[in-house]
Image 1 (cartoon, one colour):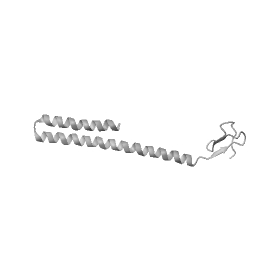
Image 2 (cartoon, one colour):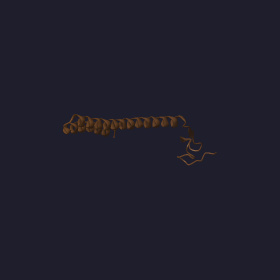
Image 3 (cartoon, rainbow, N blue to C red):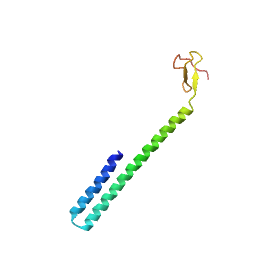
Image 4 (cartoon, helix red, strand yellow):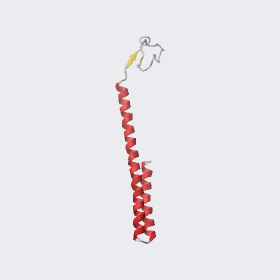
Length: 100
């Protein structure tokens, strides 16, 4: 998505230069050039915002996995000696329920 926004911004600049030359006046050229550059800057900014949001999301996922791994405790089933996470209410191997 970011690449599409960058390419669209570059195309907006190119089109504004071409149309500006087509007007035949310097003022028309400047108006179209400023318009094209403004649109391109907005698109480039959106691209950067999306990139930053994806980086933040990735860091949050890494942090969540680390925290989950950090707080994970394993229990050994007294019935079948199978090791499982303490988040389960019963042993996934034999079905033994841990007492509360």
